[in-house]
Image 1 (cartoon, rainbow, N blue to C red):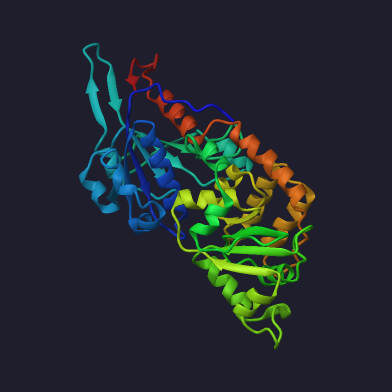
Image 2 (image 1 turned 90 degrees about the vertical axis):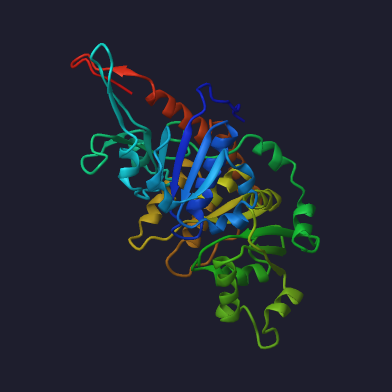
Amino acid sequence: MAAQHKPTSPPLLWDVFCRVIDNFGDIGVCWRLARQLAARGHSVRLWVDEPSALAWLAPDHADLAPQLQVLPWDAASTHSAGDVVIEAFGCEIDPVFVATSVVNTWTEDGFHIKSAPIWLNLEYLSAESFALRCHGLPSPVMSGPAKGLTKWFFYPGFTPQSGGLLREDGLHERLRAVSRNQVLARYGIAPMRDNEVLVTLFCYEPAPLAVWLKAIAEGKAFDGFQNTRLLVAHGRAAQAVQKALTEQPEGIFSEENPSLSNLNQHSLLQISYLPLMPQHAFDELLAAADFNCVRGEDSLVRALLAGKPLLWHIYPQHDGAHHAKLNAWLDAMLAPTQTRQAHAAWNADSPAPMPRIDLTEWQTWSAQASAAIWAQTSLVDRLLAFVAERRKPSENPQNGQKTQ
């Protein structure tokens, strides 16, 4: 595991802008980033258009004020930018906010100094080649009130050449200390049965869900395990499971066994539905499970850090671009054939049989992938270094201008 480093530069004021688009993934990532910057001694203003998710996602968020403030998006126009502005996931903040913070002065020696915040566009996570090519590149602003300023692309990623992944100090030790029995008891879930595998399900609406539930209920989903305890996340995952069960596709139910309650009593599949939970509780859930089905980007990263076998349901795009993104990630993680086949079926556009899962083989791969991530520096470490480098004064020998 890579050593954690504290910043050597003075504390800065960071402005992180976030729009809550769908499923709370954006606010989840931005909150983790803001909290980790604050933990490093920086001051952070998180500007968000819909902060209500923080009530359950980070119930202690108000305790971190004034070092970390959660502020309404529309109020930014009455403030000046801090030292660093982060435009998360292309949320297009008002350039006037940045432009009003530009200071033009002249030194006694005649050098023109144009001082402005470091302006970063924190992009979506991807292992595709374009992300590595674009990471760290400048994007000059060509029009509008902020004309003449520069944005910088910052791409999270899975390799040392990328922007890295978010993880807080002390996470590795916290995950290793997780007790499965304590996690289950927290949600009123009965102790595990003999020969039972613990699976978490956090997904959108995967096409093979009904087929897979049938295989699980028949004890045919995991090699070496007949019984499965399925913990289903609140929201779309729970709705997808309930729909798959009540519509009775693929003969999951018979006339003698028509209800969800009877399924839980008589089949090899036990289903428990989970409430909304804070980020730290979700991390502990992933660490307690044997197999994690996750979706989007934030939960993928947390599942990787937990080091348990995982199945990623990538956000589906209408043009099919998500398949290239998924395959790029599988390539970067050196995924074996079984893992690739399961991901292809899980993310297919139409129902397809899920391959039977060998948890021993899958655990070997997951542990290797996790170790590779832990061996690298974190996104916050790389972000602080990136900003520090761009805050250094420089001189242009051709025109004598000094910039910062």
